[in-house]
Length: 186
Image (cartoon, rainbow, N blue to C red; front, side):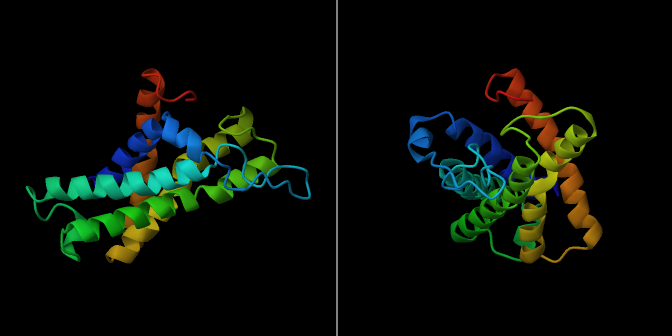
């Protein structure tokens, strides 16, 4: 499972680095178009941009492509290749789908957090903070797991194990990125 999920981890780091570039800044238009809803709050907020959205799709396509070359050395370890050939086209399509689902499944969480007055990219204290800390780690993983489940058959326990494993890795990678100064918030 970790072998199958490694490109997603690589893509997350790649996208975080991409978000520091000038190209990202040129593409960083808000997904919500700065729409203000009935509650006088933004739909998703300033941190959900087209640059980040497209960056994650492209980063995941590239990382899946590169990981496919690594997996040629160790055939049979990645679940996807048990059902699809390890070809550049398959890897680009699978990677783009995984990246798309990753960012798509983050949007409902951002919508809810704006309604609850949780600032973009910030955490809050207390029970609400604890709940959203967990949700922030797993929201995108529901989408990633869904694409994995569409690419190859898996039992329900494996789907949820992807989410648990991904959450633990997400926390670890975020701490490393924070300690190295790449990420601003823990």
